[in-house]
Amino acid sequence: MSDTLIVNEIFHSIQGESTYAGLPCVFVRLTGCKLRCTWCDTAYAFTEGVTMSLDAIISKVRTYACPLVEITGGEPLLQPAVFSLLAHLCDLGFTVLLETSGSEDIAGVDARVIRIMDIKCPSSGESDKNRYANLRRLTAQDELKFVLADRNDYDWAKRLLTEHDLANRCAILFSPVWEKLPLKTLAEWILADRLPVRLQTQWHKHIWGPDARGV
Image (cartoon, rainbow, N blue to C red; front, side, top):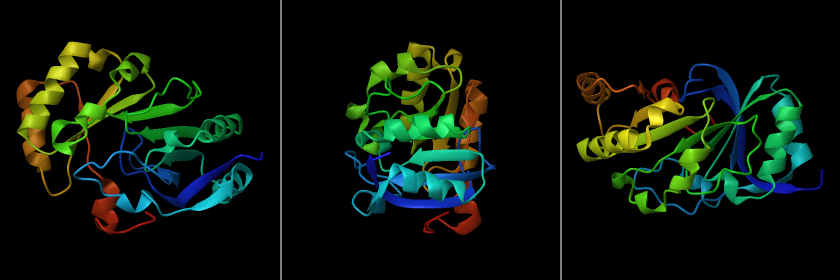
């Protein structure tokens, strides 16, 4: 394959989020993002990276002998060659996760890929960039993530769940902003409202600390 991608990092770690949390996973982090969320923890991926062929990326992924792969960023869908990478990884038998911000069209993503899509809440400063048409494209294998910083975010997310009947479409993840919204507080809100959502945390930060890279 002659296509290339700008890659920030490729590493083997424990999946820290989603319903796949706790499993060993190979991460391919691509460079570039249009959004500037207030709580972003991967700003280094906005510009840092090296150009790699798809063959080189796949060869590196295969060295870890791990069946689970996540393509993340930045925003991976900004680089057109990512669609070929996703499809080829599926062809090779990998379980492929795609972490995307929700601001880019997911229609062209291979149907075998598990799409973990953010929907940006008000505190992110980027909620006006949400591509709501993507919600109709989510299937039962996909996951929708809300990153919440405060009660306003929570109430906003709760309204969206009802308006779009999201819990009947795919798994819903509520994730608190690290050291901003306590897990206990968010758990109590979810229980009080009996929401059909999954509370998650960022396990890689609990294990290696919030500033560690390549984990």
